[in-house]
Amino acid sequence: MDKWLNEQIQILDIPNDIGYWLVRADGGKYYEDFFLNNFIAVSDNEVTLEMIKECAKYSIAGITIDHYKELYVKTYSKWTNQQIAQAASRTQKFLDEIKVGDLVLVPSKRSTHFLIGVITSDVYEISEKDITSREQVHYAINPFLKRRKVRWVKEVSRGEISEKLYWMLSAHQTIFDLQNQRDYINQLLAPIYIQNGKCHGTIKISKKKGLNSNEWYDLYSLIKKYSDTASQEVIVKTNVQSPGLIEFISDNIGSVIPITMVLSGVVMGEINFLGIKLKGLIPYYQSYKKQQIEIKRAEKELEIKDVEIERAKFELEKDKKIWQIQVKKETEVERLQNQLQISSFDAGKVLANQTQADNLANPDADEL
View 1 (cartoon, rainbow, N blue to C red):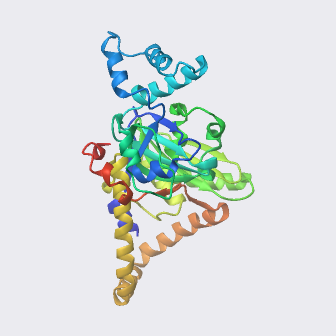
View 2: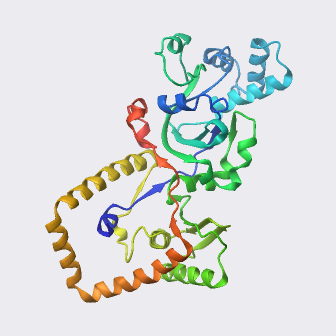
View 3: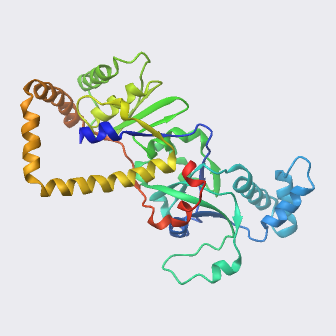
């Protein structure tokens, strides 16, 4: 497994200029439709894309929130000023502020789970016939016509999101900006990622009671040991409240990877950094699923080839010196892993591509 990791380490590279949005599926009613058919949508079908584009033609400065309000006043004359303002703002965000490459979170009913996806298209509009002609399905069909395509990459549970995001569960807006909470969302994407020139790594401590002073000392000693070779400082952010997360941040990728991977038990000993590859959001998750298939195939082959396994063990035990050093390292780290119940924080489950064939056919999707 170490050799596989040495050759296959792939780090998620998150663009610094992407947006982060929460888009509700009408209280989770259309959660399954959004997921299975790879889109998000906004309501108020009577305000069409054609009307919006026509309005923009006659504005030198482009369409503004006031233009949207005017459209809504004409279209929904019985609505209150508050309803007009909220609807106009919602539509403006969906059309003008959300962009291709942005990340979107969609909560399920009662916010027990969240879909995380990447926007892969500009706004488009389907017809009423497109909705009424669909075959009968077991889930609620979304009736909204203004849409954007999405490549869903993960589904996470409510228990995995940071408490710092709980406020959004009670908020009532259909769409709102999560840019200020991006670090908490990034943690859900991958245990190790890079953004804005900094490498972030996250581990989870599941010990029920808080860490005592000796445990903190042992933990920081190991952190120092695996980051001592780097010239850049490693910042440690903790949220260990029985249980909780610890995040490592550094300008040096060679500092964060060993700390995160060794402490989480993903790999023991040295890591060959020559194999590191930075990947964008969609390629990263496509590669992840491919790697899982390759691992399962390799494990199956190993189960069959008992003779080869025994030979590999013999070769490993031949070099006593290297073996003894490796055992010493494992014992030191494993003791703390068991004591503090440390693991990699790899939230949720990566979503398969099978239900998202339309988005994968989008030539722009692989660039994200």
